[in-house]
Every structure is written in structure tokens, then in C-alpha cells.
Length: 348
Image (tube, rainbow, N blue to C red):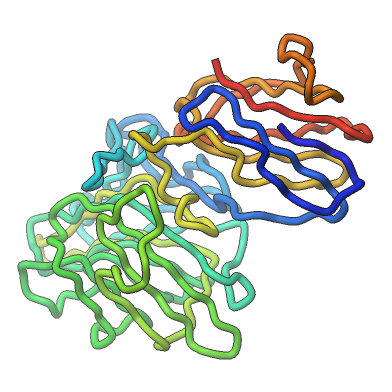
């Protein structure tokens, strides 16, 4: 429940019922304030056996995927269940990017609609991935880039490491910078990067492999890291796989997310799943709501009333929408808010 009163300058949660059908929050606006949010999402929700090239789904992108040969959308999502039994929220299909079909090194790239840099604070990045192919020495993985400059590569970034390979990361395109985990790269993994951007100094990066979903992992729990090594600003992503004389690698990827908090990039269902409003913003006279914890693909309704104490049956319907495949919702009340209005987010 959100109040649009301008008489106070505060954000206050009145109450929230875990697992319930209703979220109630009070918001008073005197100055707009942005809160943590999901910045980009790609669930590869495209037809099975279709090429990834030119696809334009997801959110937080400046345009479609570029041209690549050998990329193919695969029916069904990759999956991850953590050690507590929580299940990562997934939707759509997944992308299998292979160097076999072109019989050459494979690469495909997409530009974000934003830039993460020294002014960004902390950035969280997550994806599901699995390495494959017929030659475990071939490189394959996922990169963050600034324009066409590689910042960090996640996966198997170099052929210089003999099998058995483990999940690793490197920066600057150099094998000598590689940092390794102990997690086998041939097993599907939930990979999470935490990038601490630092103005006037090198950034810090932490790689977590298969962390629990219910709370943000601490820096000391990282599977490996880069501390004060390089600049890790980025505005684009790239998927790549290597080929040489009939030997090829491939990388299977799914559920790519970029956010400002761990919760943004690790939505889940399980015993602790909670319907919640995580972002609220007064923007151009409109109230923008963003939250998570809903039923994947299910409907929600927004109710409003000038009287918080009135029975819910007396509240008016302000609008409706559907949760996305990750159980998140995005809603904008384009009508100018009155001097005092309250909002409820409700699912059946």
C-alpha cells in the first residue's frame, strides 16, 4: 500500500505478510529517490531451434543480439536448486552457442541500454551456464565488455589450461590473469559476479559458484576473486566458443541478469519466497512500482483508496498486469496522484 502524500519525506514499510496475497507499503514523496532494481534480463524466451542472431527479447537492452553462426535456442530452461532447497526462477528456453556449426570460432554480442562504471557503486551479474563440446581444451564462455573491449571473461577463457577444467574468470584477454574455482565447468552452475566499482581506483570482482538464493553471499564466501586488479566498467555482453581443426567448444547459457542487489539477480521460489515491492519511484508525476515474489506469469491487480482504513472491497481498481517469468512486476500509475492515495498490490 503506497501513499502519494507530499507532506513527509520518508519511505516506510507498514507491514508485509510472508507468502501472502497482499503487500502493503506506505510511501510519501517529497523528493524522488531511486532504489535497487533489475537492470537487464535475458531469459532466451524464443522458439526452440531458432537462431539467437537478431532476437530482441528481454529487458535492459539497446537493441537485438548481433549476428552469430551456430547459436541455437534450445527447448526448456537450465535449472538450479540451492543447498536449502530454493529454486532459481526461470522462464522461456535457453541458448546453446556452439563452434561446431560454423567450424570456426563463434561469437555473438549484445549492447545494454545502460553503462555500469565507477559511479555505479556495486553491480551484480548472474547466469546459468554449462560448458560442452568435443575438446575440453577449447575456450568458451561469457564476457562483459565496454564497447568491443573485453573487461572480464567468465567460463573457460583460455586453451592454456588442461582438463579437467573448472569455472574461472580472467580479465584483459590474458590467460595470465586467470583466477580459478574448484567447480567443474561441465556441470550446470549458477554463476554470480559482484563488481564493486571504485572511482579513481581499480575495481574488485567476486565470483560465487552455486551460492544460496535466500541471502547475498559475503565477499569471504567467493569461489575466487580479483582485488584491485583492473577497471571493470561495462555496457555490453558477448558469448564465445572456440574451434580448431575439428575440435570445438560450446556454452549453454540461460537466465542472464544484471542488477543493483543480489536479490535482483537471484529470484527464487521456496519456503522463504515473499511477494514484495522492492522499488518505488515518483517519476514525472507518475508512481512507478517494481517488485517480485509473484506467481510466474500470473496476474496481479493494483487497488487504490484515499482511506487506508476502509474495507478492501471499497478500494478502486487502479490497473492490472501480469508477473513476468521471474515472478516480478512492473507497474506505472500514469494518472497524477492525489494529495493522499494508498495502493495495494494483490494477486489472486
